[in-house]
Length: 550
Image (cartoon, rainbow, N blue to C red):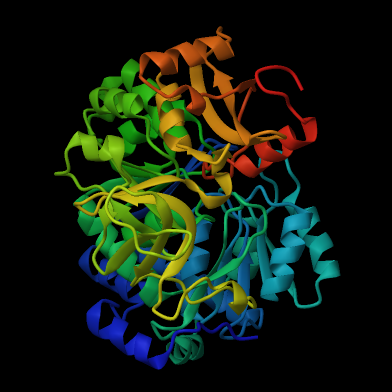
């Protein structure tokens, strides 16, 4: 099976003329080695052994070539899928670049996935190789992988990895230097910038994953423009604790530093205290993650401001950024907090810039990057004007090349507008505000409840650590709003207290949550996105009644 995009020749030519770079990440790696062979490229911090492993750009390129030779020894063919289920270890970028070197497709998989999810994903991709940790977070990935290999006929090889190196990764994949014949094969297989080089499964906020096909052109034009919007340079060391198996980590923790010839610092298990030590030790200037990561680092910065002396930009994406948190973070870190929005299907296509006023960060998800168009449409498909809520559609130079084996789910109309599934508003200056997922909308007696605005207000309540508002079924009104709250330590807010808090801020009574659920944690993807469908399922199963127990 060879993965191919559904782009027309006319579309390719237009994008090549306007925006696509016509390069692969291997070209940028070559540039980085030439410009600074002994500058650090990847620094990996591993929790299990409290380890640190650093590779210069020259050492990274050497490891890539060794692993590429190992992939040739395994018989990996151009166009085949190599699935990699690794945490944020240094071997992950090495493997991805080695796949590029031999023309294979990288399929990065979340470490939290187990047999049920992996059997579907590996089967759909017809993966030829699966690379996994021997063990991670107390789970035996090696045993699971070998069990999967017995079930999946296309899966020919399983290779295990240890965080500090050694084991099968060193013996099977990195065991020898490439020969002249290997290098000739690398040159023959060097992928075209239009070839599919990555298969990224959607992260699972709505249940069923889909395989997103990504090319060098679609990914790197976004990475280039994103770095420019934030004003990042090759001297800005960046920390990535979001998984490299998700597009946030893969594009901006792996690809972006190589494109800029910069240093990427990887943390495999999120520990805020350890992240603070890393920021201090490595001189980290930038990171990108979702709201919970920002909240954790803000608490650390309030206690240890000196550790953040080098830090200057945090880009918050994946969930709305509460205004109170942005204010606290800005003061504590003495840094610029930005906001952005994107999807696995296109990367982050909106972001605020360093010169945008604070209100833009508080109130929007940024403005479009170059060669990105946004519009909001009504249920009837009419394009809506400024500040009106509707379904968000996007046309972007970074738009993906289709879903693997599911062209029917592409979601683009004849003019190339992609239906994101999000509800949004766009103001007169072109700044976007995501107001919810179309499946997360709450319609109470025919009136839409502004879910994101209410969540943002409740974030500021002193007894609320985290909050998600979801629909619960109601016979009379169709749906009512339920607030699912993680309380601040030592507190237990009541529904009446939350209602009074919203009253003080002038919120209409019909927008108030009519039920309160206190939980220890909200269900999330590994990148921090709240899985509201799980909360809705729980409420529907419990058949709740307004304002009281089910």
